[in-house]
Length: 405
Image 1 (spheres, rainbow, N blue to C red):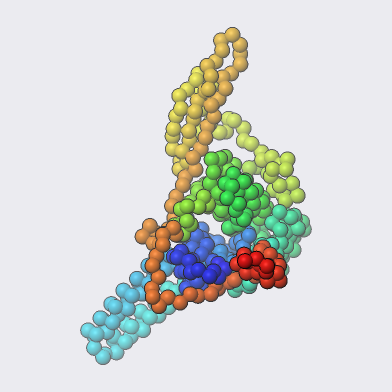
Image 2 (image 1 turned 90 degrees about the vertical axis):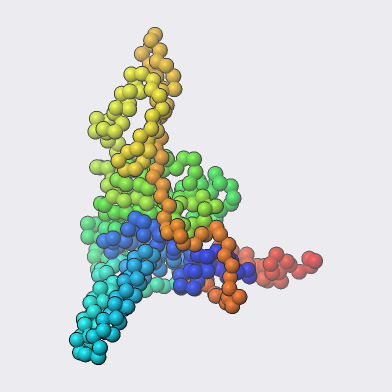
């Protein structure tokens, strides 16, 4: 969202500046909420990698200020317009009598009572290593999401008056309903490297979410879609009952980014999350016994008895399961089992946002009287700030320095 010498033609970029959002990524969260109803019954939210604060701004305006956006906001506008027109016609037919005025007052009273009200007891905590300008009702923290000391600070920010016997573990009195993460590394253009670094960032956000989410909670994070996205889907299915991958319309189609939406947090019995020993550093999630897994036992039996052809079926959660059967024929001379071809899952992929809205990859013509607006939230301490200062001291600008033609 930094100011550019060239006016960008991205519709969502310009729309974000006109509507007062800190970044165009605010529309991504709004479209995800429109599709999955993320904010239903949510009062405690943690925003990871929050700077410059567009997602925290959405949480503040929706949960604290009670505003509506997207399809819900459009429906409210249509309803208010319809009520205004009908009320105006009724007052016109009733004349200047008192009955028409009383009806108008009653309708205005009903309309005021139907206005969205802020939710009570809402707690929003935004965490990032970069500084962030304050927002109404949002507690900002400069902390590392991979460090164990972040957990007690986070729980203290959610419940300042509550003291836990063990500050490193969440108590039943301070669970989190929703954890979101829009963090991404500085891309290099090497897709394999970018996907790996992004997966590590996602893994760090997931480890923190496992420590603070309540049973049934939700987790939303940015991912870079690669060839092994089904492995990520299978890993998330261990701790969440429903996992889907979504692509908001405000996200450019030319970008490999997408968002994983996990609902129904249900960790396995006996699993104790901790940032001291996070997943991937020797900690293993307890696996259920093979007898309890009804979906995989018939497939395993078929693979052991005889080689099977590749099969395809749609599971109840919307995922497509591909069973590739056996890769080799069983040998009659020995008791070794045939190698299994393996099972792969294709995660349910949804496109969010109204298809009649703007296209993030399209170029739109600007009106002649167009006035370029400054960003609402300029970068407070961008990573390239020191490089700009050094270039300025050298007398250079836009790639030119002193002594060069």
